[in-house]
Length: 113
Figure 1 (cartoon, rainbow, N blue to C red):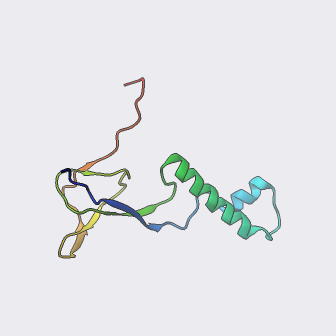
Figure 2 (tube, helix red, strand yellow):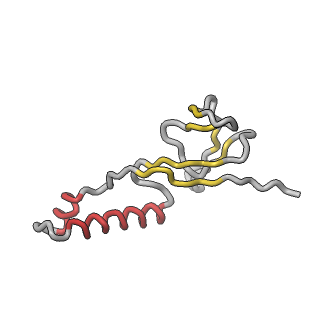
Figure 3 (cartoon, helix red, strand yellow):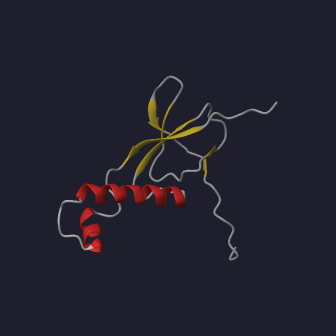
């Protein structure tokens, strides 16, 4: 019988700053009035989400929660860690994980390797 891991990834927090500002979008679209600001902001957010899904990465700072059923060996993750990884142990104590051994996904094959 093969063991099945219960690892889950959830988005915990997303930075509210969009990669394209409202002013830049209005300049690009040549819109002077402020009547359509809400529509333009929602279109910027929708375009970012679509591009993130298509490219399989995030364009803004995003805090992810990875829930593991155990810590044995290296931690495989489809998400590249930026600055730090925090964790809770079984007693619920929080802290930065020391001596973190993370296996990042391999890049796509390239003819230049």
